Image (cartoon, rainbow, N blue to C red):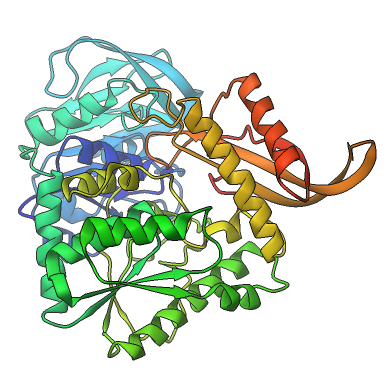
Length: 515
């Protein structure tokens, strides 16, 4: 890229949302740990820096700080929450514990003309226990809240700004506008980060990496692998060898849908491997979710190695890794966050992996992936499919994986999604559309009564969420009559199930998937 906004991560749970909001302004950005090597960051030709929030206090021993090269660059800086406090501390101001902490919604008033926030009232989201007691020289307080007399500060001459609230979250309605003003108006970035530019850039990157060599691609049928495959096919054409592995962990009718979509839409050669028995044998007796992911990751890649030997053993393997995968797996080159779970395509591959990975979607958010897919001409039904985890139904079938349990889960899941489709709740044109919905089979048995006879069978949990970015999510408020219809069908039509429950947990504290 010819220009970029650099986001330095001080440990905030919202850091990835900053990146998403900047990308929504069609400006390219990258997220780095606050102590990433300067040469790596400066090589991107940054046009400005955004400093994220963080959980610590700037005066604590070992607290993250702003690297010298950032302040010496003379580039615009926007500090958010902890980032604002770090900026204050670095430039000689004073930060102290607030008498009254602010967590949740607040109202910020701005009463002075400034490039970042025009005068007015702003509903914002606060999350801090410290506040600015005195500003560094050259700064002016241009905004305040009930508990923060310096909620917004500005040094217009040096283009340095600080906001005590979080403009990146959904609960700050005009936050996207604030960030866009910073990256476009103040930093001077051109809004040129578009699906077309992404496609062109990634095609060039793939060609540079693989040259004239053949490339193997893992097709799962999900949105990410489908878009990665289409992008790779656009880049290298007949060099691409697409392999679809039927692991036995697929949704109902998925294998047939994938074969039809890829052969008809792309015209690409698709090798279909039936490995259902191999995966079931490898997972026999395994109940731990992390062990499931590792086994599936290794079995998956070994299957590809076997196919690779049959087609000449290509050196390169394309995967549909996307940014949320990287974030949740805490890839060491990007974020210093706690690992939540292992993704088979970023953290669960065997150590003796013989492929060189090509990941054209690695730093794209889900909405960007979909936009690229549409620009590539993929069918709408494929681009807007429900997200599906790499390990498939194995992480939705809690407890031991068996063929009968997978069949029950597939049937329950199909009933759930078909009823939501019939009710119009999966229509992407709706503002209240469901972002993801699926069934989970629980290894919990309960007593029931069917036909005047006692039953002792397993339970199905239904999960439906609304979300903008899949980094955070809320549970969908489904109509009771619809839930009753779904539960009735599952209990009557799915063998081995006599109870249905509905998951009403948001993310955080839960993840979207159960395992």
